[in-house]
Image 1 (cartoon, one colour):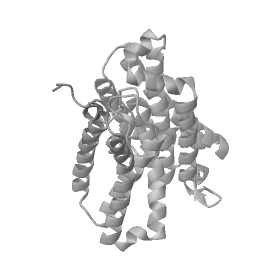
Image 2 (cartoon, helix red, strand yellow):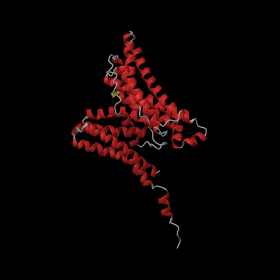
Image 3 (tube, helix red, strand yellow):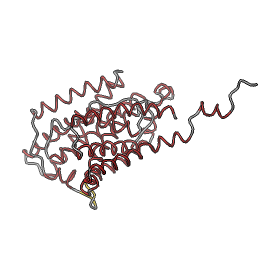
Length: 335
């Protein structure tokens, strides 16, 4: 009798079956539905039109930050400084706008000053992170942890630890109170950014290069790709997207807030990883980031409505990151 395993056994041990891959594809959407229905049963306010609109708007902010994290996670990195960068951009843009208002500039000029200064601060932070990671060879954890503290220091120094007031109404009207065909500005901006980023990741040389670098950096270098430049650009794009989100949140609060970033770094990583962006690199994108953001938003919204303590919510969010990493490893085993 032959010692060779039958063909079926060989197939099962050498490649995951299609139904396992399908389970992973549908796991998060099913979990979203179950989670939403569970909270709806616990509190009927979950289904109210006002709350559904609130979930959509909140998801737009979280999705922007999750998309930002996804860009660098695809390259096997991450950005711990995202939250403090949001605070720094909020304060920096507010200080620039109040100075422009004091100089007598017209509202449009003040608005441009705020937008450009905010995006510039974000891009500069990303450039710093990218240079330290790609050119100096420092691990993303250490590099972005260092810029985490730098950004907090700058935000606190510029604002003296207090909210910065005096921004023009046009700023909040454009990025928060405004709408397009009845759709709030935040949702419109997130949709446009998501579409552009999706096309950039899937239809451009730069986007495809990100996935190649994340899958196998050494092979990408051998193939002639400028790996270091790609990594730097990934961190610049990440922080620039975070800066845009920071400007939107600043328009929502109506002031530059030195504590605006809060736990956004953890939320963004959790959303990206839970959605399916792999910490092993080379896998993920806009769709996974949006799904993860929706999951985190529904979870947070439901816990707030059911009056779960804020500290307990932090425990849950931390646990979700751990679970997301475990699930990521399980997903890799089925590829």
